[in-house]
Length: 192
Image (cartoon, rainbow, N blue to C red; front, side, top):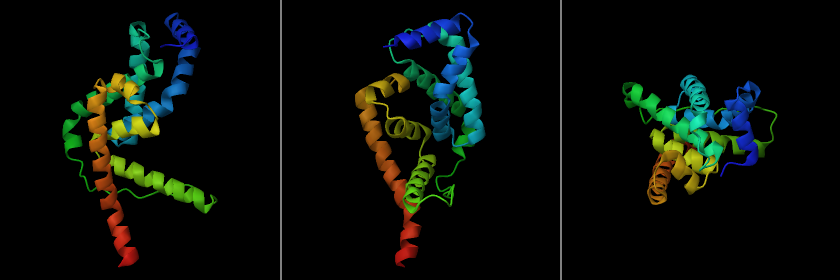
């Protein structure tokens, strides 16, 4: 499944070309960071895990077999690195409260109203993702934000497609419940 360009890039990296590895990092750093942020819910930890992910990618490059997309392999490493980080810091993650509220951020006042609405919706969804268990947040992120299909997610999360379908259904249901909890105070104040 590896493209010729990807294989050439991998070969260059294995032969010591650091510029080629910089290209890999540039191509995948935003998606790796997004996945880590969804799972860890902390920007500093997500940054740290992203760096760890790329160190692992570099050191394990010889073990890449090419039976999946290179990006899928990288995201699997990122996902597992996040899980390792969560296990290592389990106590802190167990203490996170479901009812933590994060404020929506409006980044630019110059944007048109339509853009603000889209951004607000995205922030609400991100906020709600932060209230979900890490694996649910990761699954929803991979499926909806990273637009990965179930076959790719199967390789990343090492779960069968049928299991993923069930988990995706349950994660959507949890997301709807959290969204309702987040929106309920606003609806009451608007209609109250």
